[in-house]
View 1 (cartoon, rainbow, N blue to C red):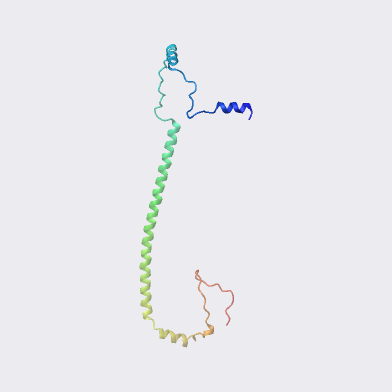
View 2 (view 1 turned 90 degrees about the vertical axis):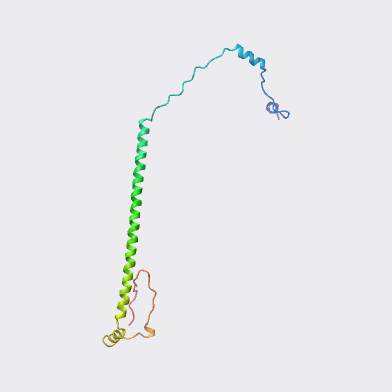
Length: 157
């Protein structure tokens, strides 16, 4: 370390357990300073001038924000009302569908009870020459979800 570093280290070093008070002014010097100096009274400070109201630009922005908010609230309520109405319509149509399905099932049961299956079999065999297929003639397939089958080749005879 050179002499310069030692000087700076000593200037900022504190010895002992308590820090020293720098430039302590005795009380009698303070009293003399107060006596010799003339008292300077400050002029009373005026309160800052308060504006009464807001300027035109702020008022315009405030009115525009309120108008946009009201417009969005009105549109939200309209959309909410439409959703409620559509839910009611769906409920009515669902109830109507259930009623029609029940009527359809009842009519189908009534029709199936009136059909004489022996007459249908005799007509198919005698008039149209239909026969039951042999075991090697039956081809099974799994149906697809879209309800139709795509035929890639001709069916062999």
